[in-house]
Structure formats: C-alpha cells, structure tokens
Image (cartoon, rainbow, N blue to C red; front, side, top):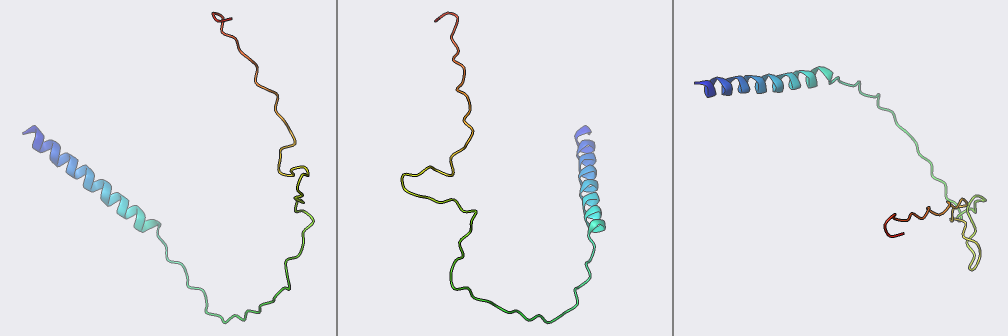
Length: 85
C-alpha cells in the first residue's frame, strides 16, 4: 500500500517538474523582429604581397630567442628529511 502511494507522489512530482520546465522555457522565449531586407554591395581589394610588421620578432639562426621569458624564477629550496639527514 505504501509503495503505491510513494510511486504516485513521485509521478506527480516528476510531472510537475517537467511542466514547470516547459512553462519557464516557453515564457522566456521571445520572438525577434525580422531585420528589413536590404541589398548590399561588396567590393574587394587585392594586395601584392604581405606587408612587414614592425612588431614581429626577428628569428635569426644562432641569435637570441625572442620567445623566451625574460624573468627567471629562483630555484626551489632543497628540503632535507630529518631522518635521512
């Protein structure tokens, strides 16, 4: 007898949760206005080649690495175990 009542309560709670999710989803959805249709004209330009940038680092064989960090962290302290000395 108790298991039937528990199943009914669980079914009611589950159905209520699903109904609440559907209602909240439907109430939060809003229709956007359609944008007016317009015609656009596109123009394209071509370049003769890549333009050099001044910000790009120079990579030279044997030279310094521009991508290496400039700050070097101090080494970790060496810990000694009290029993091993």
